[in-house]
Amino acid sequence: MISRECFELYFECSGKVRRSDGSVKGSRRDTIAAMKPGKSAEPQTATLAEIAREAGVSAPTVSKVLNGRADVAPATRSRVEELLHAYGYRRRRAEASRSPLIDLVFHELESAWAMEVIRGVENVAREAGLSVVLSESAGRLTPGRTWADQVAARRPHGVVLVLSGLDGSQRALLNSRSIPFVVMDPAGDPGVDVPSIGATNWQGGLAATRHLVELGHTRIGAISGPSRMMCSRARVDGYRAALETAGLPVDPSLIVAGDFHHEAGYRIGLDLLRRPDRPTAVFAGNDLQALGLYEAARELGLRIPEDLSVVGFDDLPVARWVGPPLTTVRQPLTEMAEAAAKLVLDLSRQERPSAGTRMELATSLVVRSSTGAPPA
Image (cartoon, rainbow, N blue to C red; front, side, top):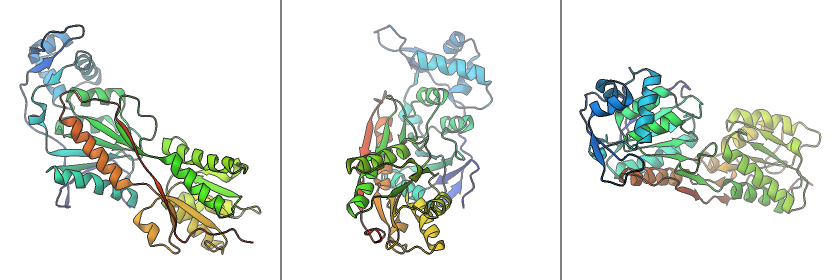
C-alpha cells in the first residue's frame, strides 16, 4: 500500500524510479514581454525593476516569484501573481527554459487504476524524450501550495491532473510561467476554460444496467463512487436511465455511495446482500468495488453469477483474472492518459495556448462470466 502522505517521485523513461526534491537552482535575469489591456501595439518589454515598481515590491522579490521560490509572503506573492496575470505578462523563450518533464498529479496513488494512467502518460513522454514526475495530494482534490511552487520551479512542459483541479492562485501561478495543464477524468466541473479529457461515463452506466435488464433482472443495486465526483454521478444517472427506459422502478435504497475502494464494495455489498429483498444483480461503480462485492458474496455463500450478477467499471487487468472473470465497462484509461499528455504537449508548443478543449473517449461493455439470468 502506498502512503497517502504527499510525496513526489521522479519517474524516468527507462522505467526506474528515484526520488526528486523538485528544486531548480539558479537565478534568472529575465525580461518579460507584456501586452497591457486595451493596447493594440507590439508587446513592450519590461525589466524586473519596472515590474517591481508597478507591483510595489523589490526586483529580487519579483524574481523569486517568477522562479517559484517559497520564501515570499503569501500576500506579496498573490499581489505579484495577480499583476502578472492581469497584464498578460509572460516569460520570453518559454520553450528554452522548460525542463524535460511532465508533471502527473493524482489525488490518490494506490491502485492498478493509477498504473494504467501512469503507463499512458509515460508512453507519450518517452516518445517526446521527457520524464514524468509523479505527485499525490493525499486524497485532496486540489494540490497544496507547496506543490504549485515546486512545479513553477521545475518548469515542466506541462501538468496532467487526475481527478484533481487547481484553485485560482495555482492557475495564475502556472499561467504566469506558461506552464499548461490538462485535467483527466475531472472530479467536478473543471470550468469552460480548462482543457480536460474524460470518458462517456453516463453511456457506460446505461450499457451496464441495460445488459442486466436484458438478462431478466428487475431488482438491480448500484454501488457508486463519491457523490462529489462528476464521473460517479454520471454513471448512476446512466443506471437510472436504463431502469426508467425499461419501465422498472428506481429504488433509492438500492443505490449506495462508496469511495471507489475494495473495502467499500465489501462493506456495502454485505449490507445489500443481507437484505431479505436483496438485489439479484449489482452495478458497481468501478472494478475495485466489484471485487469487494465478490468477497461479500463468497462470505454469504452466494455464487456468481448463479445467485448474483455483478458488473464493474474500468476493465482493469485484474477483471480478466478473477473467478469468474468480471463483466465490466471498459474505460480506456491508458488511451485517456495518452490523450491528456499529448494535449498538454500541444498546448506547451503555443505561446498562448487555446483553453477549453474538452474530449470524451468512448466506453464499451465487456461481457464475461460474472453476469447471467436471475435465479428462478
